Each structure stands twice: as C-alpha cells, then as structure tokens.
Image 1 (cartoon, rainbow, N blue to C red):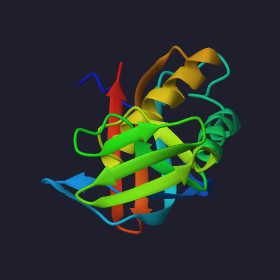
Image 2: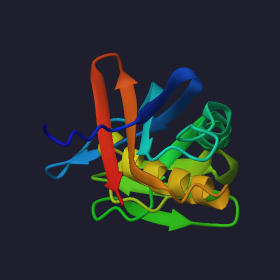
Image 3: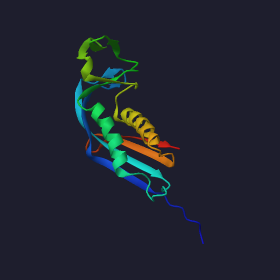
Image 4: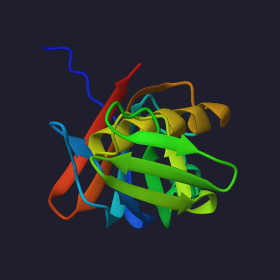
Length: 164
C-alpha cells in the first residue's frame, strides 16, 4: 500500500478584506495614468494542525489582514523604490513626476510602500510578508505555505506564495 500524504489548507477572502486605492504602475518605460481599483484580498494558509486541530483561527487571520487593508484603504499607493518615477518627500506632501506629469499628494493621502511597482503581484508579495509577520507574532510558527492574491477586478489577480 502506498504511503499517502495530504495537505491541509484554509482560505479567507473578500467579504471585509477589501480596500479601495489609487496607483499608477510603470511598464516598459511608460507610466499608467493615475487611477484606482476596488481590491479584494484572498489568503490561503497551509500547515500542520495545531493541538486545537486547526491550521489557524479564521478570525485571527481576518483580523490581521483587515488591519492591513485598513492601512491601504483610500490611499495613493506609492511605489517608493521605483526606478522610473521621480519622487520627492516633504513635511506636508509627496511629489511624484514622470515624463512631464507631476502630481502633488497630501502626505496623509499617501501610503509609501517599499516596492519598485504597485502591480497586484508586487502588492501581494508585500502583503504576504507583512501578514506572515503578524501571524508569527500570534504564535503561528507551524505554517508551511502562505499565498496571497490581490484582485484588482474580477478575473485579474496577482499572487504571491511563501513556502517555509
């Protein structure tokens, strides 16, 4: 008889794991016009069962992710490490320029992210790393995989998976 191994996984998604944000991604030397999305977040966790016989509490995962979506909600997502945008930070504002277009955003409306681009793929990688930190702070050290999807619109999702 074959030795069979299975994988246990939980998923939390959408519902209250949403945020509305503006961005302007860069592609092939060009920059999109400033625009926004109503993003949905999809999270999958894999791991061994705890002594309580679950991978992790759904509510705890949702609370950690929800805190992150609240930080992102109604912000301009600034790709702070962009190789293409000219970015200036002042006490009151962020100034972002590209090819003759210049935007000045009040500091309170901007979430500077340590990313080269604000694509769904890059946002999902950042989100996965921050979520992992939050879950480990709760004691979730038994996880084997974390996957995060950032859906820009139905049918368009950028994914990132961390394997431990």
